[in-house]
Structure formats: C-alpha cells, structure tokens
Length: 341
Ligand code: SAH
Ligand code: SF4
Image (tube, rainbow, N blue to C red; front, side, top):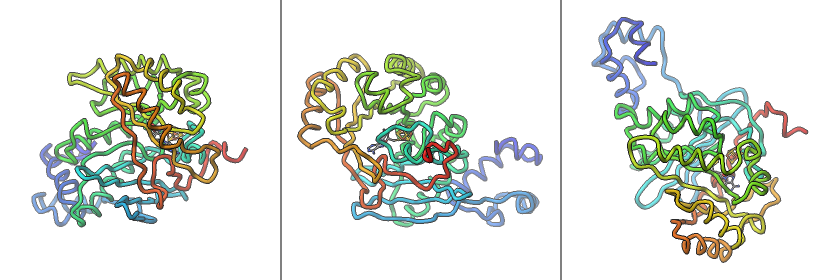
C-alpha cells in the first residue's frame, strides 16, 4: 500500500523503507522531522497526508501489571487492548472487530453483539499506542495475540496485512511464533490462512463433542469438530517451517469439565501437534456460568497429561480492570440487533 502511494508520487521504493522506520522504529509522526526525506517530499506529505491515531478513552492498570486500554474508534464504538506482563515476556492482546457476531455463550464480547470490522490501521494503532506507553516505562511487547474482541478470521484481509506488519523487520519485527491468531473455527478462512500467513494458530475448542460445542460455540453448527480438525491438519501440513496448534478450552463448572469429557478431548487430539490451554472461566454480569473448581481443573489436566498431551492452565490476570479473557466488552453499537431481541 505504502509502496503504491510513493510510486504515485514518483518517489523511489527506498522512501517506503525510510518512512516505515520513522513511524514504527522511531515513533516520529511529524513529516518535517523526517530529515532524510527530501524537502519537497516532506512538503508534499504535509499537504496530502497525515499520521493519526484513534483516541485512548481510558487506560486502567491492574495491581498485577496488566494494563487495559479502551480505544475510541468513532461512532460511539470502543475496543479494548490488554497488555499482560510476565517474567520473560510481555503479551499484547489485540482486538480485530468491534464486538463479535459469533455469540459464544460464555463470552462477554459475544453477548454484546457486533458492529464492524477494524481496519488494518485500527489494528496496528493498538500496538502503536501500547508500544509508545510501554517504551517510556522500559517494558516491551514480545508477543501479540488476536485474543481481544472479535473473530479475526471474519476480518481476514485487515488481519493478514496487520500480521505482515507485525512480522516485518521494518515495522515490528516479531517472529512468526510470537504472533497468534485465535479463532473459534471459521473453517474456510482457516484453510486460506494456512497458506497466507505463517503466524501461530490457537483454536477455541471448549467442548469435546458436537452436541455441547453446538451450544457453546454456535459456529460449530456450521463447521463441526471433524471439519475443524481436518482444517487444523491442513494448517499443520502447510508452510515450510514446523507448526503447532494451541487448543483453548474454557473451564465451565458442570458443563465441559468432567473427567469423561477430558478423556474424549484426549482422543480427539491424539496424534495432532497440539498443546492445550485450560482457561478458568472469567465471569461477567450477564452470565449464568461458573468457573470450574481448582481441583476439577487439576483432574481434567491430569487426564490430558496421562494421554501425553501438553497442557497448561492459564492464570487469570487483570480481573479487577475487567481485562481477563472474555471480559472485554467495550461498548458496541450492535448492528445485528441480537442483543435487543
Ligand atoms: N474470537 C476469537 C478470539 C477472541 S476470544 C476466539 O474465539 O478464539 C479469545 C479467547 O478468550 C478465546 O479462546 C475465547 O474462547 C476465550 N474466552 C471468551 N470468553 C471467555 C470467558 N468468559 N472466560 C475465559 N475465556 C473466555
Ligand atoms: Fe466471538 Fe471469540 Fe467471543 Fe466467540 S469467544 S463470541 S468467537 S470473541
């Protein structure tokens, strides 16, 4: 895109490299200060272009170091971005849509409804806003995960271009393993993703059979588990480098957390290059679900371990600022009107 822009202006391709470095590496947004560009080009850019960011509406810091930004993307729509610091890394959880149309029953974003897709600029702005704040505090972003609001595979084009920038050495320069797209299983898009971008994949599975998954993750009615798993096989086989998949499984008391269900899950995942992430359910006001007890989660995890499946339980972070998984609701003008029926 930038290449075309500069070509139209009659500039050489290296201008793209220069301007990307100014913006992404040096966070310089004033064309007049980009001193290695010609004076003529700087003037031209001032006349026809600007570098602008959506406004931060609110920033909350939790005691455990988690930071949540609520970002105003216009027309009374707000998205959320969360930074989660750990000993050896800092993960930024970004949004791909304003709300989500997939209506998973345990997810606050899903309950809110859907308004629109985010542009690549709005996706990348989340990283820029966080990076600017964190750099001043001597903290860094080592990983970026599309686990905020929205279903990234229903906004493919913008998400893939954003991934390109996240991996580009002239922009954020992250390795493909440190960028993750999380999806609830949009199978046709997942088949395309396998060839389009080398980033990591997380699948929100949450149930070991179709009857229960149809209820918890309604898109399963369209793309049932076996179809999803064969798209996963396709992803694992594509690309030139070794790939793995992270399966996310939210622990809902008395719903999907029994030992029998753990055994079923182990059978499903046998032979796949997979890791399982058990996520204690994070409650939100409108929900009927409860978080599984610690001992139930431990027994579930033991079954998976015994079957040779690498499993970890995610620690809940940022609760007091409603920044934990599935608590991101922003403020969405619901275009599906689902929330009003
Ligand atoms: N739409 C994508 C990415 C955003 S959701 C997806 O579904 O994968 C990011 C993760 O948070 C998903 O694994 C999702 O299932 C999980 N999640 C949603 N609501 C949750 C809740 N209330 N508690 C814990 N995890 C939740
Ligand atoms: Fe959408 Fe993911 Fe929430 Fe499901 S879990 S409603 S796909 S954001």
